[in-house]
Image (tube, rainbow, N blue to C red; front, side, top):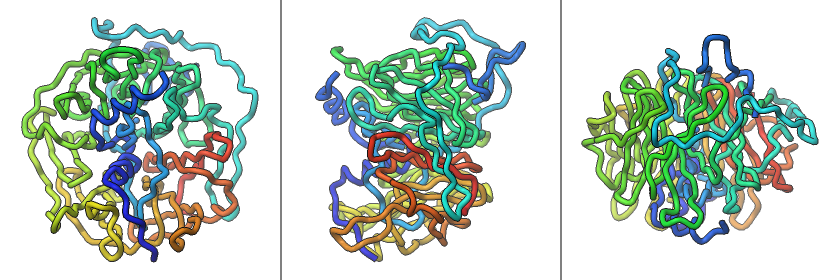
Length: 475
């Protein structure tokens, strides 16, 4: 087993962003500096309007994007040494009841997207190719745009919806951000485009018939380089709501008190809340330190969980206002620290996180560099359960039917190319390579997401075209 070369603290922070779409622990000042240095659909089947029902069915991580955030740099290029890498799904469980339409609040940006726009046929057709010896498929030309933003960097292109399915949010060269949805990662349908230019989306969920996306817009030429934003889609059009100037919204979750959005601003950690997804307000909170390092936000009927992945800490709240710390990772000697990956829902209903040890100068070499695992019965209480010997370098991991999937690169001697690989596991401990991967003309992994049944790996080919590897099993 070959250890990874030492890297800077920024590397581990970028990796944490990669591993948790929507959990990018980077400083706001750095991302704003990077931004200011850069040059300035139709309703799908899932969100189709139904008679008598205006609101219809349903991010990250980095990346989340957000080290990333303002610079929109959410690249999965920095792999992590592990056999069971970090995850990339935010298992928020939204309420199921539908809501009546609400009047547009005063701070809402009026949507410019037309209702059920007439689509234009792309000049190409999607192709689906089954991998040799595998049930997985390579999907080409299903999404006709790269994931580059106007700043020239890559952002998180695809998000999994915990209630099932996927959303792709892709910026175009004209600063327009187009949105697509899919139930399985194979067949995609276009929704209306976001109504604001320069959008960077960091997380997406579905709640009460609304699709809710959060992130930021880049304010070219303005005093405040970014504004934290929420976009909601009711099956026909998007509404855009500005939360705060000079801030960025990182995560969104639904729970017993409604919707919560976390973010980062000039004064550190920020929190916003909404009862219905239309009217948003700053939310008072106690128990969370102001310098919490862009924690991942999860929610379900049991409350809300915030998890800081670097130097791990976990907080829980039933109302989104009063928070109690429920886990603090053990201290290590010197400046070394544990780091967790994203919190993943396992097939048995429990939760997992896969991480490791950062030494202060880079990722630790084996045996300390082996993958460390955490388990939780409820998202709230976590236990460090041991380590797994590395077999390769995982970019991230996502849930799939009956197990987990992780793309990455095979171990290789220092200085030698590391071939692309995808592993699957039933228990998160024993991993097997997926058949047919050697046939892929792979260039770069941008993301891996899963809804618990299907999983999608977003790949960038040598020509800069977005390709997808989609599957619903372990083989």
